Structure formats: structure tokens, C-alpha cells
Image (cartoon, rainbow, N blue to C red; front, side, top):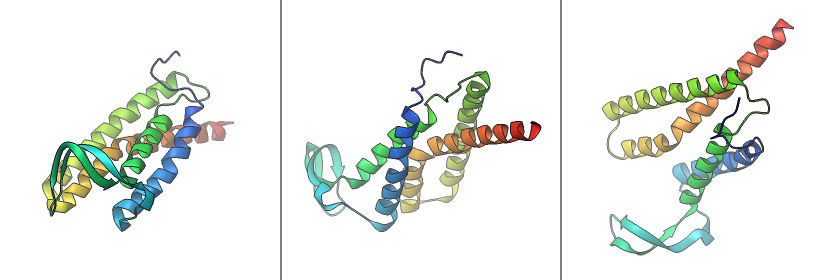
Length: 158
């Protein structure tokens, strides 16, 4: 089956190499305030609002970009992992990929609706930060789980 929008298979390895370290770094940034010192830079900001500082509109602001780098690398890695071809791409894999994407979208938005109802203030800010990444995570987990279970059931039939 010819799929036009998937990355070549070799991108999957690159994706995992980006995904795992950036997930660990993002976790450290979010929960422990970890920052890499040399990434404290003057950056261009379209808009930056400091609680106890100046607001910047279309100007330069000082910011540590550790969390931005980890988020960007996570997203790129997750996209490579999720949307790279398998070694043997067939119709079953294409169908599983589509069903997993639809399933991940449903689960993501069901959880988001739940969070709209029960999380407030800074807690909701954390929910929105996680929500940036969850649809890709749900997709990857379900897609590879289905592939694993189908390979497992085929090995039992032999």
C-alpha cells in the first residue's frame, strides 16, 4: 500500500532518540524547575507577560529556553515515532494507524472535558501543558500495543 504522508522507516529510530531524552528533560523542567544554565538567553518574543515584571510585545526578553527545547524535541520525536512507516507497511497497519489516531483523539478530548470540569487555576495550566503532548502519546501507545498484540496472536497460531 502506498502512503504519501508517512516518513521513511529510518525516521522511527531518530524519533525514539529525540523522544526519550526530551521526555525526561521535560519532566525535570516541569516538576523540578530544572534549567540548563547556558540556555538562559535573550530571545525574541511576540508577547511575554511576567507576573512581577515587564510585559514585552514584539521585542526581546531574557528567558531560559530549556523547557522550550525539550517540548520541541519531544513533539518532533513523537511525530517521527508515530508517523514513520513500519518495515512492512500493509493495509492492516494503515487501518490500525487510522483507528489509533481516531481513538487517541476521542480519549484526549474526553479527558480534556473532564479536566475542564474539575481542574482550575494553576492546575488547569498543567493540564493544558500536558494536553499539548497527550494525543501523540495516546496514539503511539495504542498503535504499538495493537501491533504487539497482533504479532503475539500470530506467534501463538504457529
